[in-house]
Each structure stands twice: as C-alpha cells, then as structure tokens.
Image 1 (tube, rainbow, N blue to C red):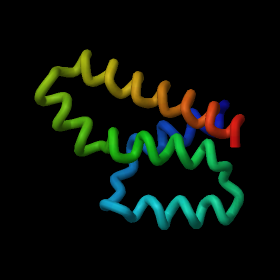
Image 2: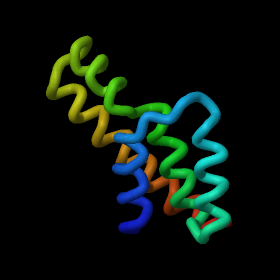
Image 3: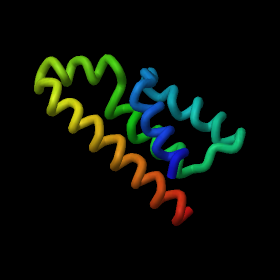
Length: 87
C-alpha cells in the first residue's frame, strides 16, 4: 500500500518526456519494482506533473486542483494495488 502511494506521489511530481517513462520504469522493474507500483507511476505521470498542475490551477482554481490531484493519486494507488494483486 505504501509503495503504491509513494509511487503515485513521486509520479505526480516527475516531468517525463513523452515515451521516456517506459524505459525508466522498465529499468526500475528490472531492478525489483513491482508491476502494480510501476502502473501507479504510469497513471500519475501523464495526468499530473508540476507544470501541468500549475496550468490546471490557473484554469480551474486552487481548491479544484487540489481535489483533482488527490483523486488522481488515490485512484492510481488503488489501481496499482488491484493490478499488483491480480498479476
């Protein structure tokens, strides 16, 4: 649970270039990262990044941005847990 949550938070603040997260996560998986945790990073990476959060904040406001970020992190954590339990 903690590793998926931590991966979601970490993925939210990383700014990956397009398609580079696949190679980075493949290396992490080869070094022992679980597939569910990798899924949590993959889900939060494109949906959230620091520049993305700043733009969203400018468009919809601070409170709605906080709710959006929390929902993405929680759903990515849950998705990682379910995927990790199945596979």
